[in-house]
Image (cartoon, rainbow, N blue to C red):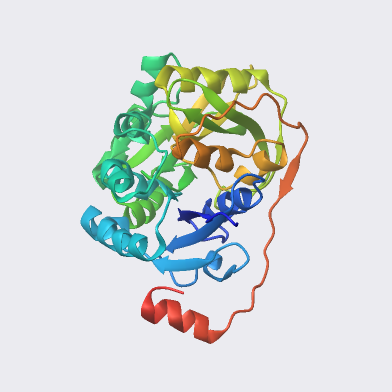
Length: 348
């Protein structure tokens, strides 16, 4: 007798030039030898490519934006759950996490499992709080300052030397060489992501990253370091290679152990010429390049699902060094009727 497949709901199906993690997360779980899944995609736009990837996603539902409030999100999710009987939910956008973390108890009572950071963990690694986070845990962090008014830009030279990084509270980061460029980036970012906008000290060096998974008890289930080989104008990795770097792994283990991190994370680091590692960001979810870790031998999305289900997961002990991912564009041809259906009914 065939077992009923596990119903997995995932967001982040916008696999474009600024890709969400949803498709690589789903792809990784689809490749699990132990998990048989039915995938329910949760989307915000009718042209998110994952909607039409029928070999990966079985059913798709439109969702209200997180900005519409927790009540609207939970009401829609309750409807979807009634139809699909979701077992595990993996949110893949930073902007969604507050709602889903805050609602974890409600979701569990509905029968939906998640494996997310706590609200305290989410807040203390926020870009606004990163300097305090670094001081608390003895980590190198660039000097940063949140700004909410254009007038704040005129006083930046009192605290920073140019160039500086200008960052949104959720996404987007630009380098600025003078006040005029800061103003341009400030207007663009604040219009898209709201306030505050973060000004961060520019650290010279090589950008490197780590994808990791913590079990919530201080243990690192897996971690794979990577250096970007090709970067788009949006700062996104379009190619990367796994590294043999004990220092990056030790730093990751130290952070997860100290914070008792629960769930996926990405460390964005700068390695200086004297081999110091500055933490630029700690993203509180699985990154879009996670499939590189899968290809190197650590299926972190599969492990996350198992943790959400309450299963014991043994930590990965190795990965393949020198594995490279190369991202590419692919033209899908879809029928107008599919686009019309998701646009008019909100599901397909």
